[in-house]
Image 1 (cartoon, helix red, strand yellow):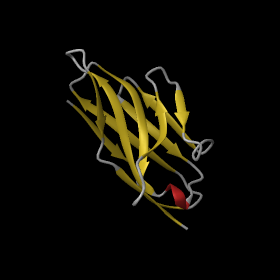
Image 2 (cartoon, rainbow, N blue to C red):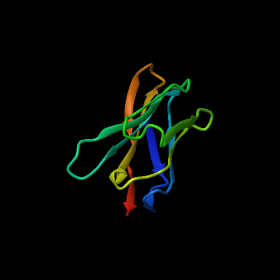
Image 3 (cartoon, rainbow, N blue to C red):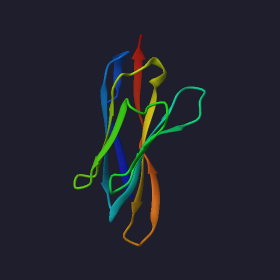
Length: 120
């Protein structure tokens, strides 16, 4: 099993910055693709950014140029640096990861989420 724990959320003024972290722990061989998703009340969960084990990234158009995703494979931690935050970035942010398990299976996991709230 894999546990994903997010941290770094909070209340920030528009134009400000936050850095989210997601730490993976448990029993697995390696973490493959990791990603950040967000879900605001009444909305569907949407992809924010995704990063491969090799460092290839892709971003939602709404965050390009403002958010940067990165990861530390040795520590099994993923980050999301969020700059120039806007009120519409207010959401619960979820960590997601594909993990290779010891039996050869590839399974997908979600964290519990961390709230990011923008004040105007």
